[in-house]
Figure 1 (tube, rainbow, N blue to C red):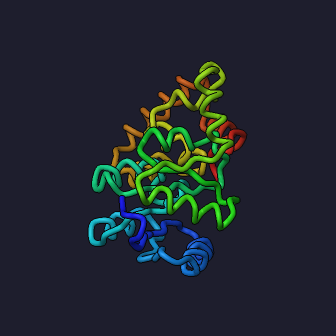
Figure 2 (cartoon, rainbow, N blue to C red):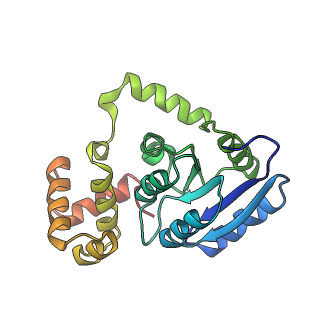
Amino acid sequence: MIKEAEIIKVLITDDHPIVRKGLKQILDDCPGIKVIYEASNGHELLNELIKQKIDVILLDISMPDRNGLSLLKEIKNIKPKVAVLMLSIHPEEQYALRSLKLGASGYLTKSSTPDELIIAIRKVAIGKKYITTTLAEKIVHEIGNASDKPVHEILSDRELEVMCMLARGKSNQNIAVELSLSPKTISTYRERIMDKMNLKSTAEIIRYAIKENLVD
């Protein structure tokens, strides 16, 4: 958290160079905000997080090496006070509430305007939360309608991460390598996911994830 008069130091994390460049151009034109690093993956992000003083991290949820939610937990373990603003192509109802529960300071879709992005960065940098009016309404609705939650909400964060990786066509072996787990453990997660969601195959997992906009 910073004082309002200080320069806000931002780290952008997205695996698409054109997205990073666009975000940097927006922020370079904004007084009081400085982009100090652009990370293309989770490994680069965590290295810079340790080395540099960072006030706000812009974090894409969908990246090839690490799920954004998994990275969010690690970021908060390393530097609990750093503000993390999640960016995603996915609608708010898919990941926003889960992100906030894990410690994110805000959630924006990539269809948001540059002005909204800047407002969000300034707000989370001083220790406040940023949520859109639409998301606030959804939070209120969820409190009153817990039974309306999508089926994948019953999954743990790790199960959701594995499900999304399976839905992207990754094998158990590939997922195991990326998550530093054994293929047997990934197979156990797969079985648990199918059991909880009453699905019978990886193909059904893929169809569900696409239907619910959980993968790109």
